[in-house]
Image 1: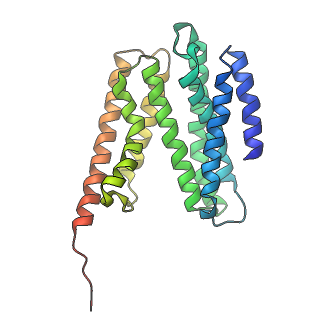
Image 2 (image 1 turned 90 degrees about the horizontal axis):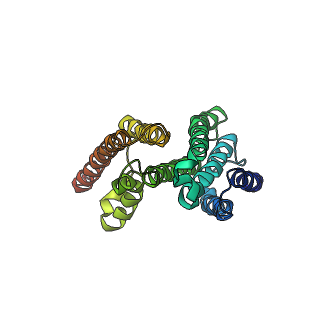
Length: 236
């Protein structure tokens, strides 16, 4: 991760210089990546293997790409301006690369027998943060209203809800519907990011993605609440 961080810092500085962005962009990208890697290290004991593994290496690269995308979206004035189309395309390409790599980490984990709870969480949190940043991009670019931020914030709202409603802390069963909706979110926000896709089409695409996400969360929440209300049967 130290090597990836160093390479990411150099790449972020070069990227910011090429697109004449503020010095705060590569610094923020480095700070975000340091925070992501710091959290990863805290959960590293859940990785029950002696090697970090190719799968987690791919996820770490995706985290680096996501940190640069996030810093550009949040801090670059050129990104939101009309003359920043080339920069928007660059962010779109980086996002596509990060999403493409997402199909490899799981394969490598299974291929080299490095499946772990750490790897699953690492991958999931990078995905969630990327979706949050893409929803921010849709808002910053004027592709949709502030409501589009709910797409990225939904998972974090669910986590906060776990403190108020203990039933939500129960483990969820694997679900194809949940995976499908996640793919829909990423595809929809990726399409919205494309410069040629403008409002109101972009808003409609975002709305469809949000409706699908709300439905998916509602199904899981209802299932968790109902599951917690069932009486526990003990056998004597």
